Amino acid sequence: MANPTRKRFTISPEEAGQRLDAFLAIKGAGPSRSFLQKIIADNGALVNGKIAKAGCRLVEGDTIEIDIPEPKILEVNPQDIALDILYEDDDLIVVNKPRGLVVHPAAGNHDGTLVNALMWHCTNLSGIGGIIRPGIVHRIDKDTSGIIVAAKNDRAHLSLAAQFKQHSITRVYLAIVVGIPPADSGTINAPIGRHPSERKKMAVVPGGRNAVTHYRVLERFQHNALMEARLETGRTHQIRVHMTHLGYPLLGDIVYGKARSRCAMLSGQALHASVLGFVHPGSGQYLEFTVPMPADMQELAAKLRLE
Image 1 (cartoon, helix red, strand yellow):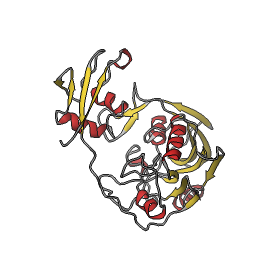
Image 2: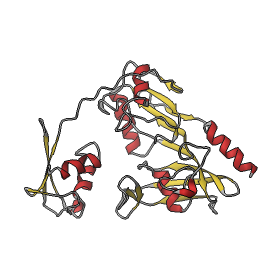
Image 3: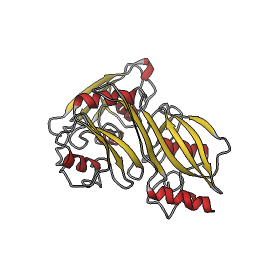
Image 4: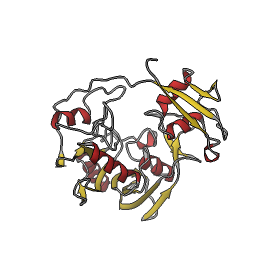
């Protein structure tokens, strides 16, 4: 490991009882929990001077040391990919992302991403997200369509990131679910964390991070419903996990909804980020953007009405 950075932590009473990998992820010791787990598996983490495993339960007063390698320099090239731009100025750009477009390069998706397209279109992007995530303040899943904002400078990035952290951003999604919720509206307040046995999935779990989704039924079909979901928090896969927890998985979401959620008309889950509102980092003015459901979801809703 060339020129690693050693990070040290001491466990407080409030932090006792956590898994080593979860604690390090919360502390932001590395870019992701899976990244940290690999370091731990390679004997790169010590608890009280001894090699520890990812599932080690921490005790008050424990000292943690972990060597974080320097990030690999990856080349991310600008690519001439069409963008549906809703708004743009010197500080930021707001885009309506199509379903199927990955937000930033990662394993299995080294190019052809939103970042590649932004680098072609914009002369500057903020550097806070690192070399593979320039300008990226937040993300939506590959197979979710809708509005995303990217920052063109670090000042705008920090301002937007703070608003996301404070949960002051307006985020409204449209979803078509399997089944018909009996209540016209409601709130799902259930903590979300890593699935206990399927590590690539999230789930409602005790001790997970606080997660709150407000929902409203917009239209009922014979076996499905069109829903509005307003995020109070923004956890990974939050709407997909919460609606499955409620008993109404998203149509097309075979990860959380399994076989009964399959939909031949969609290439992914029936989920669309329809509204995004925030305070502009420069002017201080509140901006809000709205885009309708993409054609595939509109066609799906029309078909369900006929049924």
